[in-house]
Image (cartoon, rainbow, N blue to C red; front, side, top):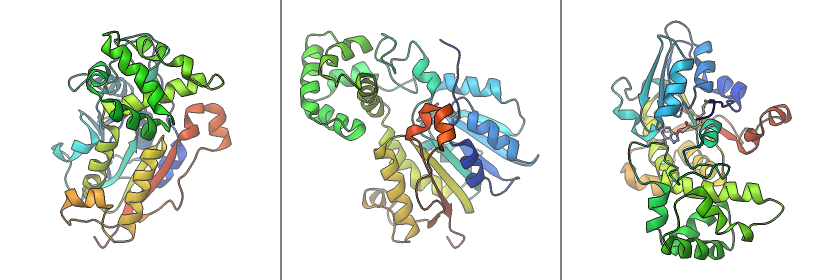
Length: 309
Ligand SMILES: C[S@@+](CC[C@H](N)C(=O)[O-])C[C@H]1O[C@@H](n2cnc3c(N)ncnc32)[C@H](O)[C@@H]1O
């Protein structure tokens, strides 16, 4: 594995919006290598506390090495299971951060299958202790499902022509590595933006393998319940499907009109009101963009649990 590195995005903005109580308890639901966590800890007083979660044990180990602090605790867990952590109680958290998606360190890792730069087995799981790998996903997916994933998660139009190639190769039993996947479709990719297109193509599969959108939908109302009145939920998204979900959730909850219909059904009428703090998504400044190209697609939205709820 190459040296672990990741620059936290929108760092100043996250701290400015998230920290309202220096002695409160905060949750970093996607702690990665602990970049944002380190900044949060710097803001907290001696009485403050930070709970860090990640689905990826390797990232969590990196964060543990970085953050030696008695105020922090680590759990190998998905953020949609945060309410099962014994030290987390409903209505108590001062702030929650979700910095969605993938760390640069995971992309750079040469045995995870996340990047077209390394021809390694198609794994792509954040949590390698269970669940299906990208190979297993590709071996069982239907043509329609894969077309829908590429359209929805990577904005790829005419997805059918790529999918037919992928399915044909899979049916020949020759779909094992990232190279196997990319080489069977890359001659169809736009020449000028081939690298970005390849990255988007792989991103769509990673999102499916890890059920990233499903987990986000499940988590939003559950996380809001963990906030104390006035506590804040900050979410950084990296693609339009994620950001749309967060925006819709905040907008519905702010209007006090319940959650979006697809979430409302699972909440059986239970509803916690929020107030949106960011009117529009916060984006990286030109300065940050020049220092960290990864921040280009980052969108931060923040909402506060209403004091009345
Ligand atoms: C963009 S990185 C976070 C980087 C971190 N903020 C930092 O500054 O180092 C996203 C992290 O979220 C983790 N992750 C993705 N889905 C998750 C989930 N459902 N629950 C917990 N962690 C998740 C990934 O493993 C990855 O480490």
